[in-house]
Length: 467
View 1 (spheres, rainbow, N blue to C red):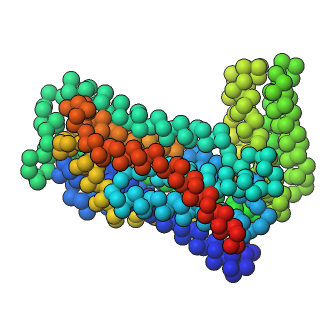
View 2 (cartoon, rainbow, N blue to C red):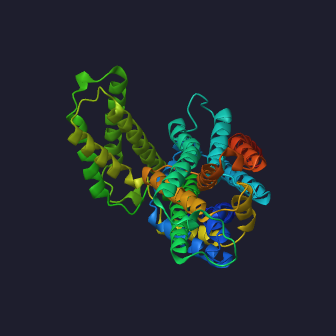
View 3 (cartoon, rainbow, N blue to C red):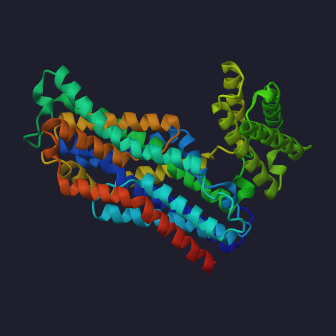
């Protein structure tokens, strides 16, 4: 398999299974975010709700694209993923996967809504930092801190947005909706009126779909991390691309950069500009007289991937610089051309997406009771009302959908939990929250990154010593 000996083939399959296990756990860990409201308002029977949610999670994976996935896979620089010693790469992958699984299972067991996104990001940062501690060139950066900063900001701001927007939405509903039935708690086990039930079903579907489109991409990014680390000669770049078309794309980028007034650039921008031109020339030399990407050997494929990633980062810096004096139309064209260039590194085979969709969808259908009980009963002191359920899920679905569109991973758990907390506060004030549960959620939120960073780093160093 991929030219690996039986031992490494077995380890590769094991790592892929671990990634599927992580996504499966992510499914049943986060099921509550979509189904808690429809279950606690008697809008759907539990078994119907989880099956419905699982289906829409799977659909979301296919519809979500791969922008978030690439954000996850690009957290670690190519140097970390392509260690010459294959055993070290396997140690890295196993460490981050086991850490993510252990923390997710632990928080699920205790019924604490916890962020799978935080868990995965912390695990990746942990192995990257540990790699840097023992690397031959410790001066290099072994974590993409720019991307980590973007992801960290989205993970911090999303629960604040969920809390605030839920309060605002509850206020709007009170002003616009004259039928006060929507603000009451279910007083029987009978379903609510049809129109309320329809709203809650739509919001449940929206959260399930958006969860699949965002969290499913994290699994896709994880699989791509594994494949690039273990068999880079097959997955460092997309072999299905047409090399002749790609040569034209490189030429277009080179032409766009030739129009830049170099004299107007700052010293820092001149450095980035020179770097880009050097790398483009390097790519042209590597392309040579090859007819397809499959003809490149492993080291050249890794080098091409590295060149393209650096060109993308440097172009982003220049486009954001005030001294980069090209007009808006040319900036847009250059951004599009570099995006086309990055398409051979930012991709995922269909089998990867199918594998993650099945894992997440099936996981969504089991293990949901612990977290559902916390979300439905323990965040607020009152039973969840129809308006609270609908407002928190509308906020969650829209926030997650926006984050997916921006290519940023976001925590479904944190957004939904904070949305429910906001809806409770909007109903009866801060006293309507259960302090113990909020405290436990906050502690888990605060501890996730440091614990997963330390655990993943420690496991990586241990596995590397063993392997």
